[in-house]
Length: 227
Image (cartoon, rainbow, N blue to C red; front, side):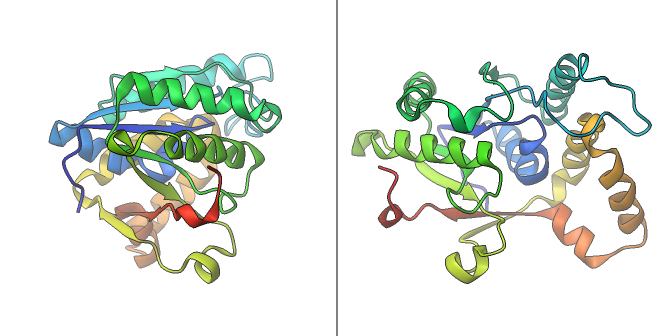
């Protein structure tokens, strides 16, 4: 069950990261009246897709993805979107302490009771991993009386073997159309998967319905480090 929160801070490196894993959760928090801030570190300018059929170029893709991110925020009803200005596929090369300070500044600014990001070592992409490490360290260094809960997305091949089943499962059936519209907003990157997903949903494919209506999170296990 999605609980009442003072404020929710969501941090991911790329436009569309939020769409697949947490857009239903974000929309649900907003509908409940919980404040939500989404900090997106880059504009995804190195995204491998240019639309289907192609409508972007390498030069135009950053602006297109910025507009898609704004459209996704609008689809979720989100009014606090922070574009943090880092460059796609270089987040892993940023100074660790600089990244932690960026995250600490966000936490100090919005004072969240819940932070959502990726789970370090279980999120595949180097930019995902760098983001996750910085967020975990920043949360870990927050004084105990202000330290927010930390819910993490994990989807690497070793996730179930090492972390087990997710600690938190949100049923977001009531906002499934919002989740779909958020994914559609990122059409330069999602056209191929949307075509397949919408066909499977039309056929009442149980796996597709399950994927669309459940969002899964792990509580971060502080014995794993990154303090």
